Image (cartoon, rainbow, N blue to C red; front, side, top):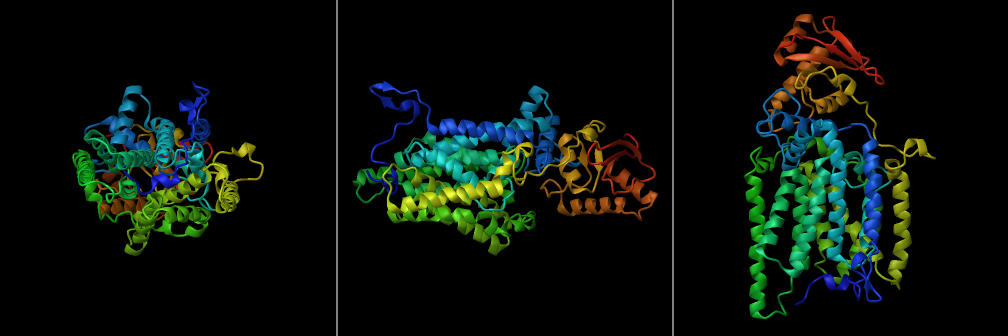
Length: 525
C-alpha cells in the first residue's frame, strides 16, 4: 500500500511527542511543545479578547442569543420587532448558546463573551490535530500557529473569520471562529480516513461535522469542503500497485465518502430554523464584501515568503494536499471577484493557511537542513517579526504597556448605561452606525436593522431605514415623527451628541463617555 504525499514529508523516524515518548525504557511525562505554547497562546489571547469592549458585529450575535433565549422555538428577528422565520443566524451554535444562557441566567452579551474561550480551544485543538495528519514533527504545530497569526501583511486585515492575531482578538467570540476550528477538525479526520481508511461511523461523524460548519457559517463550509477534496485527492491510496481485490476495497471507500456527503446534506436540510441551501446564489450581502478585494497587497504580501515551501512540496508530489488546497481556494477567491459574488472573498481567511502550514512543516524538519531551508528560515523569521510588530502586536500588548504606539483594536463605547432603562424587546430608533450594531445586543429592538436578513424582506428593511432618516431629519414635523413612532411602536431614541432631540422626547440618560443621549418617546403599549 502506497500513499501519494505523506511519506516524503515525514522524518525518517517519528519524533517523540510529549507523554508518548519513551526515554530509557520509561514513558516521558514531558508535555509537547504545542501543548505548552498552545496553552500560553490560549491564555493570552482569551485575556486580550475579554478586555475589549463590545464592538462591530458583537451586538448582532448577542442579539441572536437574546431572541433564542426569549423563545427557543419561534425566535423573533434578531434586531427588529418582527418574526424571525428563515433567519440564518439561528444555527446549532447559537441554539446551544441560548440554552446555556437560559440555564445560567446570563445575558446574551455575557454568553458571547464567554464563547471566545471555547471557540479558541476548538480552533487550537483542531490546528494541532490537522498538522499531525501532515507531519509527526513536534514543532510543526507550534510553527503553524505562529505563522498563521502573524504571516499576513503590514496592514491589518480586520474581518471575522480572518486568522491574523489582531482580527482574531476582535472576532474570537463569533460563530466564524468556532466554524473554522471545526473545519480544522474535519480536515484532520479527513486526512486520517483518506490515508488509513475508516468505517461507516467515522464517515458519518465527518458528515455531521461538515453539516455543523455549513449551518454555523456557510462561507467557511466552502473552504472546509475545498480542504476535504484536496486531502482526499492528495492522500488517497495509489491504485496502480494494488491487487484487483485491494483496488476494489479502495473503490468501496468512495461509497463511504459519498455517505459523508449524504449525511451532511441530510442534516443541513433538516435544520428547522432556516434553509441553508436557499443561501446559494444569494447576492444580498455581496456589495458589503467587495472591500475584501481592495488593499490585498498590504494585507497579505508577507505570506508570499511561504510560497517556496508550497513549491518544495509540489516538487515532491503533484498531488500534495496543501498545494491543492491553496490552488483551489485561490480559484474560488478569483471567482468571487470576476463573478461579482464578493462574499466568496471571505474564504481569504483560510486561503493563506495551506502556505503558512507548508512553511511550518518545512522549517520543523530535523537538522541538518538543505541549503534552501537555511535560506528560507531567516526570511520567514524576519517576515514573522515584521508582521507582528507592524500589524498584529496591538492585539496583545495593552495600551498602558505599549512602548511605541502599536495600532490597537477598535474600542467602541458600551451601551449598558442605556440598556438599563430599556425593557427587553422595546423598540429603539437610531440612525447611528455604532448604535445600530450595538444596542440590540442588550435586548432591545431597532427600527431598521443594519444588515440584510432572510427573515426580513430587503425592500422593507430599506423602507424602514428611510423612515428613520425622515424622523431624524431637521425638517421633520411633529406629525411626521408621531406617525413613524406609531408605525414601529418606538419607545426610545438613541442619539449622538450632534443630533437634535425632538421637542416631544424626554431625555432619560446620557452616555458617560460618548455624550450620546437616550430619550423616551411614545406611550407604553
